[in-house]
Length: 161
Image (cartoon, rainbow, N blue to C red; front, side, top):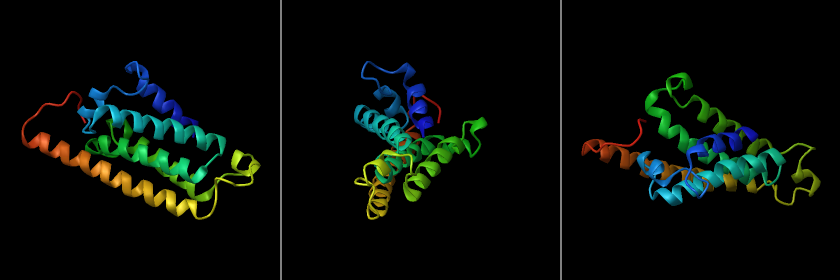
């Protein structure tokens, strides 16, 4: 899941000094407050991807990366499925891959395995996915509400969705 880390870094090329997506960009996409949203999205995406690549805290890492990519998919959803048209295909693929890794767990060549699965217990998978799923549903739901309200009042956004 180093792809998730790379994806986060590519998006951050036009970043502010904080090293995350500019808050104005997050707010233009419907995520508010912008600064907190940018920090949390960056941590979930890059942190979850890096932990998955290491095979450490796999349930939580996979759930975090899946949640971040679900938020990205919501931004691209109005463009349809295919990534070539700006759709959510790529983000959804990363989200499903991260969720799949959270469920299947790490392999023998992982830090979880080397540490005796101290941060990879059976109960952690449903707990991590349930908490992340609920949080993602709330955040994306609030984002969709803001986007609908902005469209109703004719506000311009900085970026096309």
